[in-house]
Length: 318
Image (cartoon, rainbow, N blue to C red; front, top):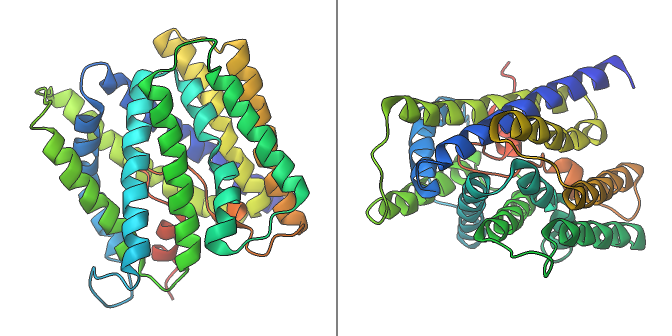
């Protein structure tokens, strides 16, 4: 592995550490406040930071989408991914959440067939099936009672994967401003309305932590951009799975969580399947669009927007 790939892998590992810390803060606040309230204030704190990024958008236009149907679907998926992710991190052990969210590359492979017209060969289909079996190992339906948090994590994975594939579908035909702001605005309205149903006054230090969530999500996104610029996507993309190591460490030290054997086995199967799919896309296979390696995968939330969009906005200027 060349020096540039080592640099890319290191930057990606650092980004994943920040993302994991971002998620730990969500879990910490989730012990005292409703997940939708945390998401509302985190998204509120994100607006000034994201606005600074959006000022770099060189294209002219409005928030009116060129493809309103696809943008509406992506907006809905982004909102569901954010709500699902925040709820799951607030209610489940960190390692379990990551293991389920790691199914997103598998779902991207499946969704790329109807949305991108991608051809998926037998090898990738076998990897997808194995990975989904890994999810079942983590969930262990019938062996234990499933919680709403498990469903929320699955919704987060599906929402994030669908949003990623739609971004690939739209390509550069839609402004990054449109694809970033509509989910943020929709999330802001929806979670803001939820405050009327369940609101708990926040201490000042906890409110400040929602700003840290926003800052960490955006900073991690920029580190991931630099990682993909430095190294090959096939080297950088698998670094997302390092989050399970962060989750295990954080969970043990901060929350007294332990990584049980079924979660370890299931996560290992899911990770192996995801890495195999990335390898197949790199080597060619039957892939034409390479949707997984090109999607900059990370479970999308309002505070951690799709890195693909940030990269389009943060192009080096002459």
